[in-house]
Image (cartoon, rainbow over all chains, first blue to last red; front, side, top):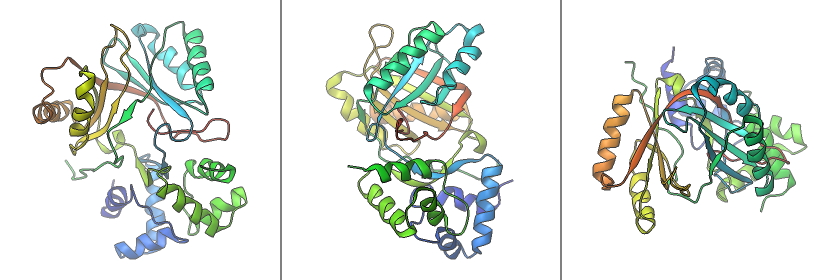
Length: 152
Length: 166
C-alpha cells in the first residue's frame, strides 16, 4: 500500500533530488516529517518494487552510444530468444510488443564498434536479423513522469 | 568532457543512491572522492546536461500504468521535426524520437511512447494526439507492450558507458 508520504516521494522527487550532504533530511524538512520517515519510506518503495532506484537519467548518446533494436521471432521461440538477449549486460530494456517485430530492446555500448559487435553477436546467437534504429533526434526534454496516484 | 572520476562516479550512482543519512559521502567512499567533490561533480554533470535528471526512477507497471504503447508514424522528412516538437508538448507523451526508416519492412521515422492505466486510455490519448498534431493522414502503427523481459538502469562501467533510452 502506498501512504501519502510514498506518493509525495514518488511524484515530487523524480527530477531535482537534493544535491546536499543530507538530502533525506532536506526532503523531510520540506514535507514536515523526520529524516528517518523519509529513508524508511524510500526503502519500502524499493522493497515493494515500485521504484528502480534513486539515481541519474543520462540522455541517449551523450556518453557512449545506444540504439533501439527489434527482432521478429516466432511466438514459440519468443521466450528463449528474449532470455538470450536479456542476458547481455549491454541490453537494458527488453519488451515484447504486439507486432510482427515482437521483441524490442535497447543496447548501449562505449562506442559504435562495440555496439555493432553486440548486435552482430545477437544475430548469430538467435539466428534472426536485428533491425537497429538509433536515435536521430530527441524532441522530448522532460523524462519525469506525472503520476495519477488516486486510488481507483 | 567528463573524466575518469566522473565515469566512476556515474557508474557508482547508477547502482542507486544509498538510502542512508549521508548518501553522497558513502558514494564518494566507494571511489575515493570526498562528499563535497561528489556533490560538486554531480552538480556540474547536471548543469552540463550529462545528467538529464536526478531522482526517483519509478516502475510504471507496478503503479498501475499497465498499458504502454509505442506509436510510430511515417512522416515526410521535411515535416518530421515540426510534428515531433508538437507531440513532445503533450502531457501524456513520455518520449518522442526521430529514428531512421528501415526499408520497406519498417518505413516509420517518428516514435513516441504513451503510458496509461488501460489500453482504452492510451487509445483515447492517441486520438487526441492525432487531432492536435494533424497526423491522421500518415501511416502509423501502435505497438502495445506485452511482457517486460528486462527493465534496468543502464549499467555504467568504464568499458560500457550507458544511456537511458536508446
